[in-house]
Length: 149
Image (cartoon, rainbow, N blue to C red; front, side, top):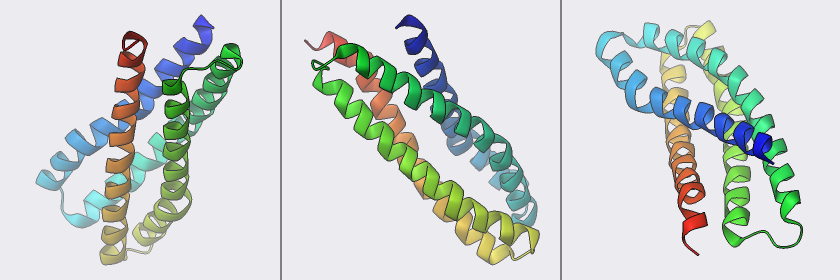
């Protein structure tokens, strides 16, 4: 159980921390110093690299989370089910971002269709913001719930 929890926590830190960095640090810095074509090329490159890691940690989160859930048997606390539901929602949002929006962004950047790619990047930003908020709420729940009784 300790190994599952460690893998689960490290994976969540990588995913949520990566979204926090991209949303709060990298995005404003890129807006300050790069023109739209360069900024869009940067984001395509960043996502290409980051999403490899996200796929890996999503797999680890799901496997480790289900393993820990199984260890509760029929008596998993409510907060565990809330985290599971929130995690599944995060994975579905990520899959939408990856398979639909990121693919459109990459096509737009490669075709140098900057207006289209910029619109898609805005959509990605909104969904990443939602996923980041969910990830922070779930992390807070994971940290606080065992102490709430």
